[in-house]
Amino acid sequence: MKKVLVATVKPFAPAAVVDIRNIIEKAGYKLVLLEKYEDQGELLKTVTDIDAVIIRSDKITREVLEAGENLNIVVRAGAGYDNIDLAAATEKGVVAMNTPGQNSNAVAELALGMMVYIARNSFNGMPGTELRGKTIGIHAFGHVGKLVAGIAKGFGMNVIAFDPYIPSDVIEKEGVKAKNSVEDLYRNAQYVSLHIPANDQTRESINYDLLSLMQQGATLVNTARKEVISEESLKKMFKERSDFRYVSDIAPDCAEEILSEYPERCFFTPKKMGAQTAEANINAGVAAANQIVNFFENGDTTFQVNR
Ligand code: 3PG
Image (tube, rainbow, N blue to C red):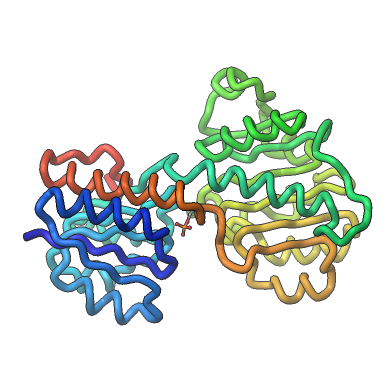
């Protein structure tokens, strides 16, 4: 009997686990649950006789892939797969997948929620500003970026976007002004919302050169990954520009330092909350379980990311 492990330091909503279990057991497989584990050793121990793993931001390192001798497939229930050692997975013949789009709405709603929060001075009682009439620059127009655009339009914002991989006409079909360069995006927005993945091209790519182009009073919104930000540049921006604000769902390593010096100009969620809704957990968890069954039963590798 195939064994499917759900390994989640940050557990899915209980309803999502019920749905995942139903799909796995209906296929005749066994579900193994490893939730809220405290060290990687627990994952290494549990994975030894497992055929498939469903994870969130959990780390699938070379060590895990080596410990999981029976492993055929790892599915990241979510979008970003920077937590999987793809080279090691490929070497070991393990298929790695994600579930694109399944948790995007939750992330998009949080981006706008954080914008309202900072625009209203972190609810400190003082008059803030409104989003209506302001311009939001969407950096990468994938699943989340597109949803952010739709919600921002509902707020009456002007929406501009830049994505080097998506043709302008595809962006403009959504009623969004496409910008030709990333510099142009940062120069022309009061809010910049990041939706780029963390990879070798993007790591620390949000640097001083780019940030310093931002308008007076501009806010950077990060629901993507902390690794895409150059923290030295971030600190320099806070120091030099008393108008600059940063809100993020993934606290930077320098969070304490900037929070203590500029508390009114930044905000970080206590844990990564973007995909923390029952709906997102159910969508991504169910998609992951179905992808595993489809892979074993039909050889379907549609969402494979390590080809
Ligand atoms: C993703 O890449 O899908 C999001 O960052 C959500 O991550 P999480 O499942 O760890 O909340």
